[in-house]
Length: 218
Image (cartoon, rainbow, N blue to C red; front, side, top):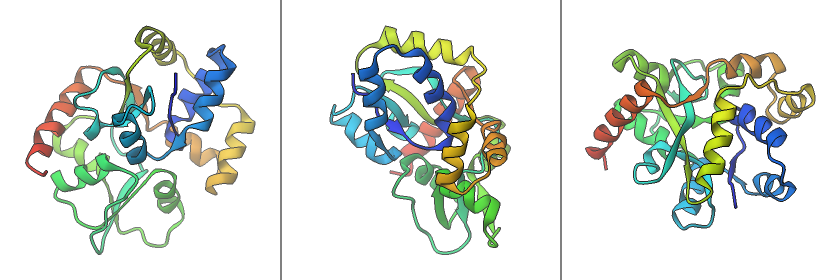
């Protein structure tokens, strides 16, 4: 099984959990090896080059997905639109589509670089897309879903275990990501409090609205 990894802070709890709970060293190596950004993983999944991954919501519509994903109940801090010239983020199909349906113009930045910008840039003239969505629809926004092509029972069991667990990230992993992103351990942990992973009724309603809206923006 080839499991692609989006190497962003928002999935640190999930990968910390599966490292502890996957017994196969081969799968652990594959997860660490197949790293990329969301839009590239979308393409590889569509071409069947990978078996499972967190796929951007916009690309997950016709895929077999589990009820787990990357969810922002309110503001997210890592999906921003900077005021100024329009510019999509090549890494994220969903964020680009979200900005369009919300009719927000500017430069889109996502992931760890957006989180860094939020905390460190002198240019604070931006909007948080998840926050805008929540205020408009009173619903969380789902940025990605765990989609699969094989090993459904195994991954479903693993995912359910993760959703029931309060994952504590080891200090050495926090230190690694702090050094990599130039964010403090405290900033990383505070950010993770803004991320949810369970896809329940409200999240599915939000996805339905988003999918309906994006049909008019293709």
